[in-house]
Length: 225
Image 1 (cartoon, one colour):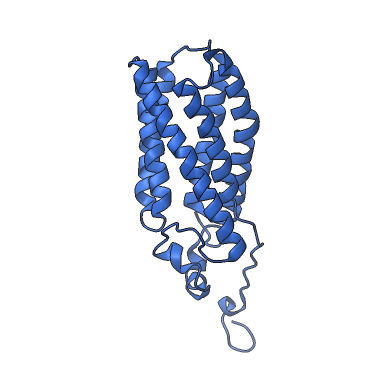
Image 2 (image 1 turned 90 degrees about the vertical axis):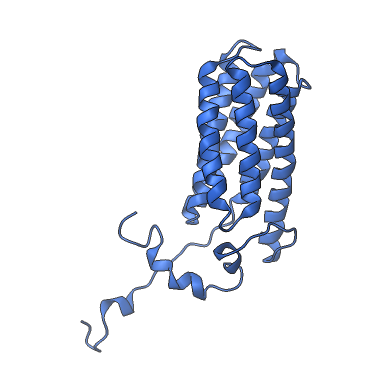
């Protein structure tokens, strides 16, 4: 108890470091990576350039997604950071596989991995419907692409890989739209291109009073995760 009769909780101060949004960087780098994977599956990139695709994915997409993941965790966006983090190491794993494998070679292990990742992406898509439906669409399309690509890797007809490539190009377009919308939103401090936010995700742009009311229960503030 303090001298003026107030409890210790009345004197608690929580200092937050301002951070830029990591999502535009994550979306744009994701879109470029998907453009590579999609055009490779369709056949626009020759098979003998497989290692080039893997090198670009590892050297360009992976580090940018990793940076976006770190910033997202620092900004206390747990769901966004988790999604970015999973895709970050996915780019590293897939890029490494492209480099290590003989061009055109399939991998059952990669197929099983894609099936598992698709399941996680679908769960994340379901959770995102609570506040960010656009993210749900992106993750749903990503899950479909993984299932199709995994089916091809486990022995299906090459036609399935081409279909997966079409989904990859669609994902690239969605990601570029999302990155543009998020960058404009951050610059203008309001929604410019629709992302269809709702619930707490929408209310976060209309004042901080409600956010302060639940701040004590957020990771990094509460005593246990």
